[in-house]
Image 1: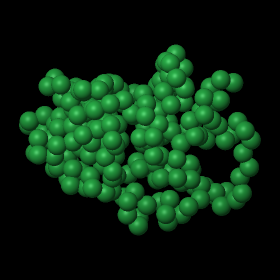
Image 2: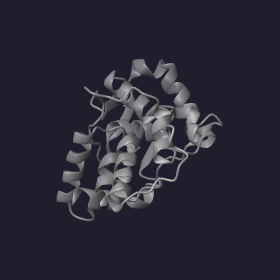
Image 3: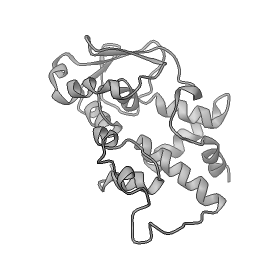
Image 4: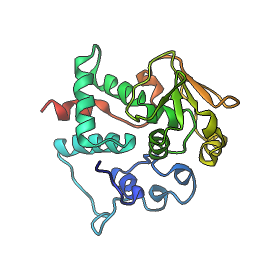
Length: 208
């Protein structure tokens, strides 16, 4: 499967905001956006001018890179969001938030979504007591996401839980560090997503 293998700090700098792709580094003084707050490349320090389409495209790229999706995956999720009741933009963010890899990251079992995706693929987590290894699996209210019994000794997972205090736990999730388990209490709403996202621009882009 195709995946981006370059510097993820370049992606953050390209979008002009922290996408939290590098784990603990994003919270330190080594963060690429804090050190060089301009797009990468020899023309990065210029004054780019974007058309309406360019602004919409940049917003879509930002969200797609934030959640680590390929274009086909993102477009398919957008189509599903438009078929649901309610606002398409808010539906899109809710669907992205309920991906298993994102939930693992939000619960504090990983320091980044990329790390969470790798841990899920390697079978370190269970959903309602059954082993789950598909990062795109969508969780529902009432489900319990837990670290497998043998995986609770994995240093990356234990280390990530210790840094959870640096990141706020969303209201729609609940975690018990002692049992390495988290519960989905509700479907995430727009108010639960604090990242600077203008989802309406994405809806306008795909409605062209």
